[in-house]
Structure formats: C-alpha cells, structure tokens
Image (cartoon, rainbow, N blue to C red; front, side, top):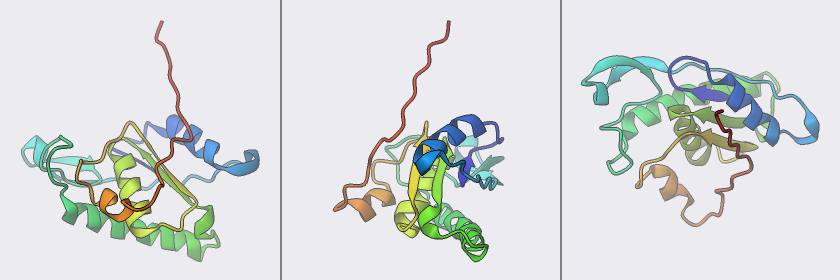
Length: 152
C-alpha cells in the first residue's frame, strides 16, 4: 500500500521501492488510498489534502498525534479489507512519499508490526515521534533501497 501526500503523482518512486522489497521479482499489487482534505495548521487552517495535521513543519515540535491516530484507524480498515480478501499481513508492505512515508512508519511500527515491510521516501519523523517510543529497544531501521539521480 503506498501513501502519497496530495496528488498521486509519486507512483514511480513508490513502485520502485516496493518492487525492491518483493522477493523473487514478483510484481507487487499496489493499493493507493488517498489522503483526506482537512484543515492544515501550517497553512493557517486552510484545507489541504494531507494525511494528518502538524503544529508546524519542523521535526522539533510535538506530533499532532490525534490526527495521526485517526488516520491510522482509517488505514487499518484498508489493511483489514486486504486480509479479508486473502492477502496475509506478512505479505503486505506499507510505504509512502513525503507525509505518506511518515504515515506508513506510524502505521507499521505502532499498529501493524506484523507486515512484511515498510518504506518511506523523502519523509521525516519528528524528533520525539511516537514511532521512536515503540521501537527504542528494537533494531528495525534499515535502508534497503536508495537512489540518486543527477540532472544534466
């Protein structure tokens, strides 16, 4: 399942990362849930298509945990539907781009530690993220995929 902030124009990088996580060269089936239109505090409360609210765009401030947790519940329902349709959780990889990557990290490490994997592209977590609270004693952070391009 890939999660991208705003428009869904980030399918290429997310697909490439997901393909690196799938064994044996199999093609992943990508779910593509959409972020919701909601008031966004960094834009002075204007509506924006984002996964969760932030107090400001900085990794120094606390997370807006209420909106993160509410979206985790919505996405848990999506995962539950996949499981009901025959996809076992140990074959599900969560990932996303930008804010969607942060959302995927919260979803995987706080709610669904039994999924096959998680990736985040061009994302960040706040320094005191709830993700770090769950995983302090676990060695889980690995970077299985990296890419660099040069513009000419």
